[in-house]
Image: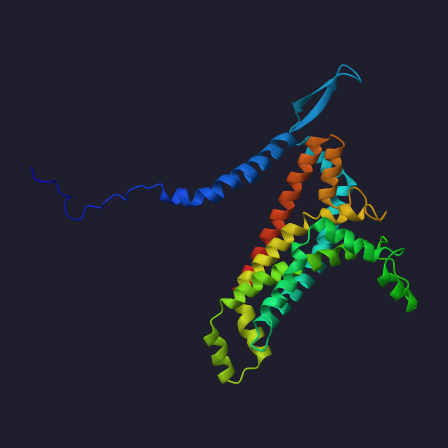
Length: 303
């Protein structure tokens, strides 16, 4: 028997293979299990509420409530206050942090830098310290009864209350900046290492200074890395929880609803899981919208 051959010009159908799915599985499986499933369950729970039957000591059961929990959360004063507070926090803290990270990355990438491995480790070490430990350490430095820093400032004739209602948000911002500047610096430094050295050498031969090379060549090339760190910072800011939670123990200026995440935690502690789920879903939606707006803004500026 002679083998049959396809007629000329006939297209061969591509063979299906499981190889792409095998490569994607290490990401997709944890993403589905630990992100999509919890978010879906939170959304489902936010559409229900607990109702007690049989009087004060009766049994509670869950009933479908639609978007009633979302209406309740939006009407609560702490929701708007918390979102506005972390938004103002982000508008100040994120640019300062990313500017410091960019400066440190450019210094490490410069030709005259020495002991790069040592300083890269020094800048990154604060990120390796657990957030609770870092917040407790800074709380000691802020406490007017214990802090040598406050005593030094007072000896100079200045009155400062770093745990007071006017300064507590920026005291928290200092902790966050100290923690995450090195993390963002490492991302930007890795992007700078990928910039071809020939570009900088050609610019120097044309008479460009180090500042000109940094501002006109390096920073525009690593713009995607800057956008990435900006998105990560926006997401992290709206998840602000550890630092305010620790500062609650040393300052009366931080309430249980100081940030949206703290408010969700307080609702959960009060067994109001449905309202806490609705608040979490709303917070995720706000974070997504702000991140998307930031991406659109940066893409337009780049175009």
